[in-house]
Image (cartoon, rainbow, N blue to C red):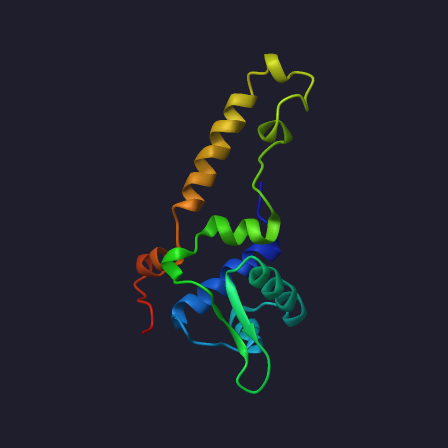
Length: 140
């Protein structure tokens, strides 16, 4: 199981903006270059993150993108789900009745518990804590 490349790029873009701090704009070209993200791919990602309420975008000479909320208020789960949709390890985890073995399957509880643990971990990890773990402090 692996998150999409698009979700990975989104996480890197949010991390880049988190390092800059609140209220600081960055040009998408700068993010693309520094994070090694294809610019056309980043444009789509920025749009999705903006729709999800994680980024503010503006055009023009003083344009760019910036965080819509504090890094401590943005979780890995939010960013990944803004791009990939809800995390679902197996189709049986989302709803019952999709598998013919549903009521008698020894695997379903394992998938459900693994998903619950993953979601809890991603939800409990915010971008301020990621920066703090690597010795970075948020710019003021």
